[in-house]
Image 1 (cartoon, protein in one colour):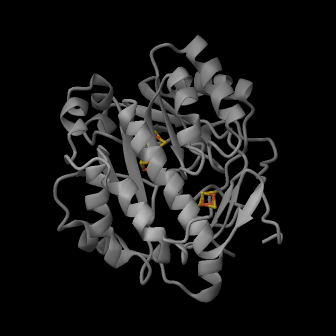
Image 2 (cartoon, rainbow, N blue to C red):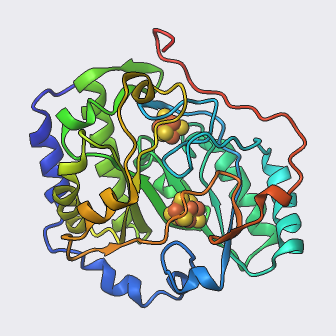
Length: 321
Ligand code: CLF
Ligand code: SF4
């Protein structure tokens, strides 16, 4: 691993220096007008379905505990039951029987969608055969994004969310306990450097291949709060469409909870995002669960058939952390 870390990261961030040029093309996209997360207006008319088919994760965020859904797109402490790809198709029929105005189907956990991409890709393949009208969306921590871009394009995925909590290695090294990449466990600066490099390459490649990209950043008081504005400029340069800053609420039994890192508040989000210009800021995120369904403001997942044991499977580090 290279250790001249921030130089590498800055080079990747700055490859595209012409600002958020893709945003103009994106704004013409009819898909954005029907995506409840990418358009606040759409969120009042259209719902989404999350299919919880991604069981494992390949990194360890210090605000996460894998008894629960990935907090990068979920409220901490929420547990969804895992579905097989075939069950996921049935789930869509079930949801549509309760609320038919669904425009987007997504995979957002309960682990990382691309830690073991087979289930995620299989799910989209099966869903496409039954529901040609649905728009596909996926969230990821970004570690395996670049190497899966052509698979995602083939699967007709149009929208990607990458959780990026820092573009600075020293800050990132305080957020991640380990990164498990191709069976090798990385820790400390080496893990942070590897993850950032992969995330930024993945974001840049996704944008260049025409995917519409949102960045989620988890605001962690005392760790990345002062860094969010700087990050927004890097994100803008990479051609990202939308920036969503979410409050960190440490999951029960997570490392940050154990060492007493305090939760962020909605006011903290307003404070760090109010001076940001040049990129769209999401203000209507609901931090939904990985089996969320229906309108963002009227989730119907509790009405669905969830009477099977939930199962999470975090990939352990070499030391079993
Ligand atoms: Fe799901 Fe995320 Fe797609 Fe939306 S959620 S994968 S972009 S379809 Fe939306 Fe939920 Fe906020 Fe996510 S409100 S947590 S931003
Ligand atoms: Fe947890 Fe993995 Fe999501 Fe991080 S990316 S919050 S470790 S599930």
